[in-house]
Length: 402
Image (cartoon, rainbow, N blue to C red; front, side, top):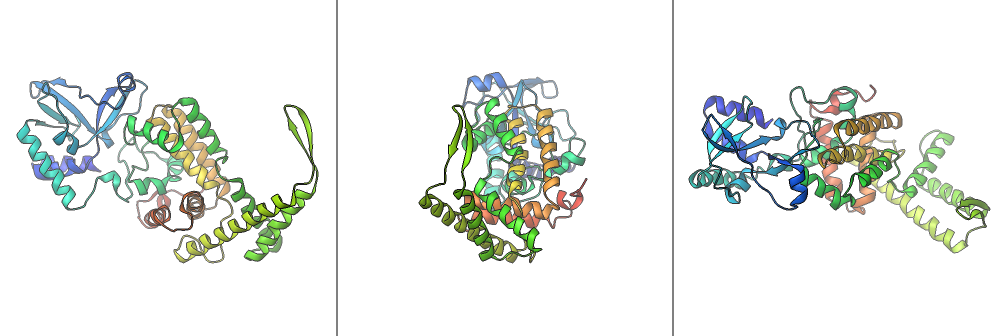
């Protein structure tokens, strides 16, 4: 944790090491949520009088020092890079990092000092170290605020994405990239701009209603075949069975309930049925090729297949709970309730972290990757390997069955 590094550098009086760590850290400034909402795209620095230096100081917190989210106060993202190059406030002459904590440090913010900060930022860029949350790494919060038990199990369901993004996997008091960053994430990727929209998607994910019905149909056909014939299912057998189910369904007459009453629907047009069968058979081939690659890369054991991709929704449901908390579309209790519910669903439908992981990755690849086996796949493969080998990983320290 960066807090430990800062504290140890402070104790040694090793200020170059302190500022190197600070250059790598994500920093946050407290702000009124009302002000941020009223001034989108703007950032202001709030100075406070500190008797230690008898001056106005800008308080900065590292992510491990952030308090539990509350409705009124939010945190905006900053960095030493931003403070060195873009921050301007003549009324504030000092910075204080993590005030009131063991790693509290005051330092002046004159132009000469800011030039020194820039040197540390540049050194970080030259060594290609990157910021801590940009790295493919397993990061955890230390101390009393970390999650444990069933909640930690639930947070482990989004472990692949947490590692890929370099997020703290086990924090209960989630702030992510700050209030505006989390709101921006939800708007960009989900079109969510309100609590009501967040609640809709949160429930959809927990019900596994965001995954494709076609994916679950073909996987369900294979599950049925495996139960009937006792194990391995050949791709040709799978395709023929799926075609048989679709043709049988198309030949019958069904009754649908609508606002106008009960409507009789006759047999479907043969051309439509043929096109649907062709699409399903292409999908079966695609899934089979992904599973072959998964076996070659160690994601899936020989002879095993992926039963369902509901993990894709359950994992994202945990992410949605965290992102909603960071964006203040929910409170911490609601977020934790959703995470616990996702945990129960994951354990009910899968037998291990590895099985859940393969299912999640298949869902992600079917949604994004188009059989390119590019970053959408490679990032997850690397994250999977970290989570299944790092001795501090929740996948190795938290039992799948609670």
